[in-house]
Amino acid sequence: MWERLAEILSALAHPTRLKILALCSEKERSSRELREALGISKPLLLAHLRVLMRAGLIEYRAELDEQRFVVRKMYRAKSFRICISPQELRRLLDEHGTV
Image 1 (cartoon, one colour):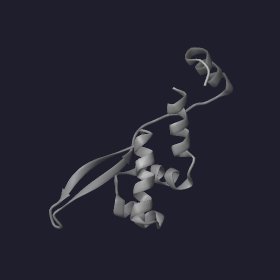
Image 2: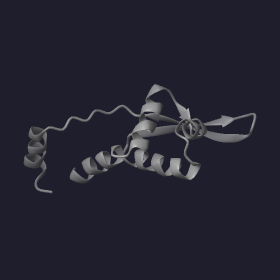
Image 3: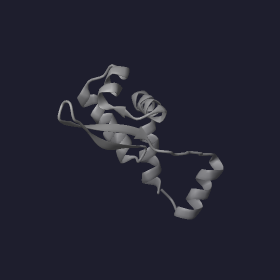
Image 4: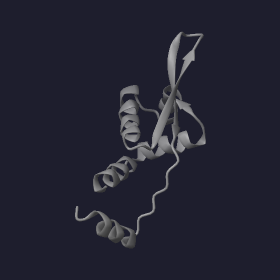
């Protein structure tokens, strides 16, 4: 439980990943669209996407680009809600034990 919460919060703790989530919450985006909007390299984008996918915050679907004969991944933000208060942390501690 604690590890999962830390993984999600860590994924959200980077400005670029927050921007990716914002872009992908508007509509599905290809990696090219994300790279162009963010001005970052493909390897850096893919590293950020891996973190977000591992945390369960983003998903993709594959589609075939028939003109170029390549498979393109279309990324979208998954629906999530985070609410953390001192009381909620105390409840988690009571339910799941110490860290």
